[in-house]
Image (cartoon, rainbow, N blue to C red; front, side):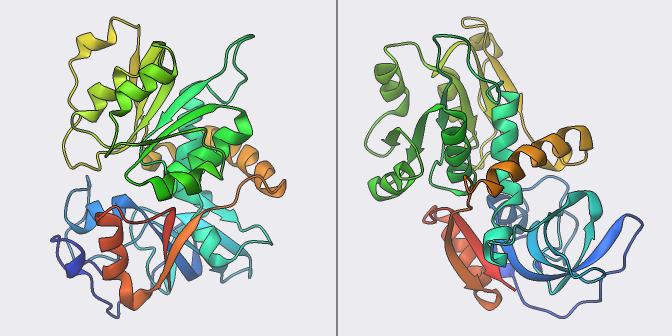
Amino acid sequence: MITRLSGPDALAIQDTAEPILKPGQTLVRVGAGGLNFADFMTAQGGYPGTPAPPLIAGREFAGVEESSGRRVMGYIQWGAFAEKVAAHLNMLWTVPDHWTDELAAAFPVNYFTAYLAYWQAGMTQPASAGKTHRVLIHAVAGGVGTAAVQIGHVLGIEMYGTSSSDEKLARVKELGLQHGINYKQHDYEEVVKNLTHGEGVDAVFEMLGGEHTAKSLRCLRDFGRVIQYGTATGKPPQLDVRALYAKSASLQGLWLTYLSQKPEIMKPAWSQLSEWIAQRKLTPVVGQVFPLDRAVEAYKLLQEGKNYGKVVLKI
């Protein structure tokens, strides 16, 4: 439970009432929950629309549907880090036979976000003749970052990724990242400019906010897009819209909570993702698994940016 909106130390394990199903919901007994930066933001009151505490934390889970015995993974706005969750049927997906609950709990948020970022950037279709799609992925060693690298590798995209450590970058290169940039040692804008001979990239997956929105925009080639899906710095994106003129560039928002309500978007996305899973081309990267009673530790790992891949809670 988030007992007050003051950060990870306000988390506590408590008993609460059994979930009551509404129309379109089914009861899932949860085995594991995936921890996202949005969960950290929620705990400290920085996530839009957060209800007044106390509330059950978590937005991503894997477990067993009680009515059918089917193994499922799902996405919900709050309430995932509990023994049972009232899950929306349209936001449940069958877990692949060869995956554990921990792997499944690391899938929905990261892989749908990454896939839809490529889709919004127009990169799920092959590039025109003689051209290669290029993308810059911030926080490339995190949950969405590692998902984006795996998907980009399947799509044949030239990928540039930022991280705070050479060790993390070396691990992401094993997933298919071609160009790792340690932003503590190098200015990523300069590196991208040099490596692309001044052209830039077609898209930047941007979840930092603050000055990085404008900086990411400067990394684009003509008609490029910054896909903004978060503000991990805690600062609103800084951008003079006139900067878009020079390259006919665009800034596009991506919020999974909104898109997940649109079956015309989610169904084709799942169709493609599940095909790649079946072909063993996608496997979630789980960095660490914590028992539920060490959730505070797990949240702080995310807060300090020390995680690699996904942090998962064992319920």
